[in-house]
Image 1: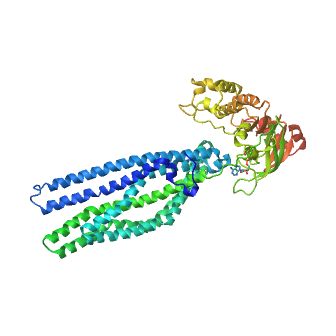
Image 2 (image 1 turned 180 degrees about the vertical axis):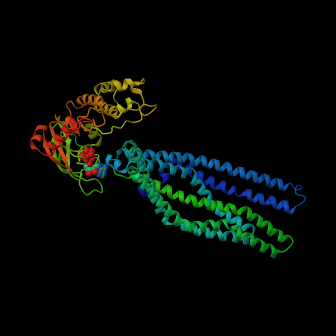
Image 3 (image 1 turned 120 degrees about the vertical axis):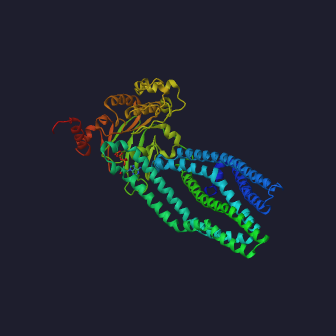
Length: 596
Ligand SMILES: Nc1ncnc2c1ncn2[C@@H]1O[C@H](COP(=O)(O)OP(=O)(O)OP(=O)(O)O)[C@@H](O)[C@H]1O
């Protein structure tokens, strides 16, 4: 895909590229097919007329049979043209959806991790996956149908007035009333309703994902009602919206349906009246024959109006889906420096850093300053919600600071090119994610150009050999398929192999041993020692035993560094750390079943 034009000029056809001609061709063909599709009604009526007027010598002129075949032929021709039309629109629709997805996903990869987290995976999936699906269905089916539906009125009007203008006028009257109510339903309020509809669905998606992710916790703690609350509330919000929306459409929808389906109620009495006036003879018969035509033909008008109504709704849905995808595409990635600078070493310095999450008034990190020389091991500890994870994530620019600056190797992280910054920092998260790919590819994600030998060395250094040996396909085993699942601790060891392969000079570790059993923890510690050798390490830990040997321990509380020093210095201070240490000692000495 070439570069996108300005946002207000972006339409679905922008993503179709040259395939837009296929869409236009499909729409024109659909219009032609619809007009040809009206002819069978005319031929059927001509056949009926022939049968009545030439009775009993119906077959002598051969007209009846000819009209019959013409009705079948035009009907088949209309279907064939429609088939070709759909073929064209499908080709373009698939291409458009693919391009939209590619553009959105490529752009998403450039956006700050913080933005992606704030959006939530349920919402992202709905916007990109469902949004492109909606536009695909719209371009493939609804747009050609719409093209047919808007071409039809001209032909319909012509036919309505061609046979008997009086019946034409009578048929048109209820249709005009229908159009009036249709326009009331499709007004500007409808666009707003579509927005609310998408919002409610996205909310429900996010909450559903959160709920499913939390099911193990729900089951363990028997908290079904409590944990279902958010999901339940999002369903209730959707229900309220749906009920309000349905009620608001109740009157115009009923009036619309009654008027367009009520054409017969006008036609029949008018037909009787006009036939009565024309009295007996040829003109009376003509009126009856014309009436038959209108009775045959007006259901086509009803179908046409319905198509216009439903397509208008789908047009708004597709527009809204495009707007939401463009919302992601227009999100600016962090500005790349015009002249990127290169860090001179692997030191880290926080200079009076303050950061608040969007829509939060209390800063998660509040005037934090510290300096880590190259090769130092620092630990972040402190009560939950103290700001440890946020502090660590600011180093790799998951978010940009509000005040102050973070220097890596003496250079502000905003002046380092994103790729270089990513190369210099390895992040091992609490819940290390493995892709649904082979173990080899999972480890190689850190450095795609790494050879198999380098991956094997990393596997050995991260003590992952036992994991690999468990599977007959070894490193080529695909995670997440055919019952191949790894425990939390095993995932972390693979993540450590990934980080070892990356060999970045700075390592940020978030709760690396949190999910591990004793055996895994031992292996993780061994892998961890290999990983951090000669590196600058910032480690977040709850288990204080793992941070005793750190060069500096920063105790974070309410977004600030409350205390800093070595383990011994902090114990001497008799402050927050000393209290945490005492609590920790008590907790490790607990024995199950022992009375305190
Ligand atoms: N994505 C987010 N959006 C809004 N607020 C957040 C977000 N992540 C964290 N916070 C808030 O920022 C504050 C600091 O959170 P942070 O996760 O950094 O603390 P922490 O010390 O790492 O906690 P824990 O030890 O429980 O992981 C908390 O008040 C938390 O509620």
